[in-house]
Length: 112
Length: 114
View 1 (cartoon, rainbow over the protein chains, first blue to last red):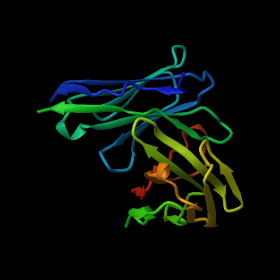
View 2 (cartoon, rainbow over the protein chains, first blue to last red):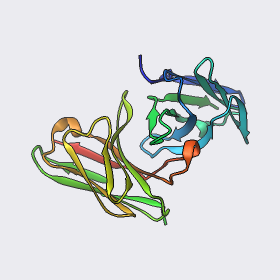
View 3 (cartoon, rainbow over the protein chains, first blue to last red):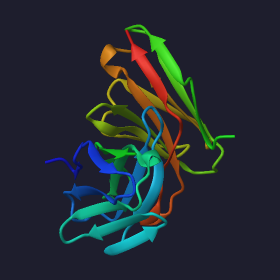
């Protein structure tokens, strides 16, 4: 079992719809969770992080964390073609070093 | 100017050659990282450094070495390049700060080993 799992996609949604990206992790001791966006050939850029159970909203983005189910998700409201990218989930499972373990990413395609 | 820079941005080399990838940052962060990214495998940690005198191996350090020349500079070397080291390499930085510690990535170096 991979430490951080994501569906590779592609996830295709129409413009204006809600895109839902999911991530599961194996280590129950994981402390914080990050979502990065990566355009093809570019570097990952941070969207947001979450470390408490529940929802965290930032503009059109909402991160949801359920530690009991070991599940974190990212919702993108009013999806735009410019949101088309690969979304990487990263997990901090070691509070001593704060190293991140990355999933392989989900490719999102927003259709105009 | 970019906060995290990497040089070169693209490099083609031959098997057996020694090459160095360089990373510099102006963010004032104490921690620096080197990752490689391969299709289907995601980002994998090669080495990380929490301070000039603190360097640690990541999950895939074999075939690589690093040098932290200064707080702001962290270099990755391939002593004898091989074709399966062809990948996209990223440097990242962070400021030590508990569970909320966030890593920021450089633009990447695309390396092709022939």
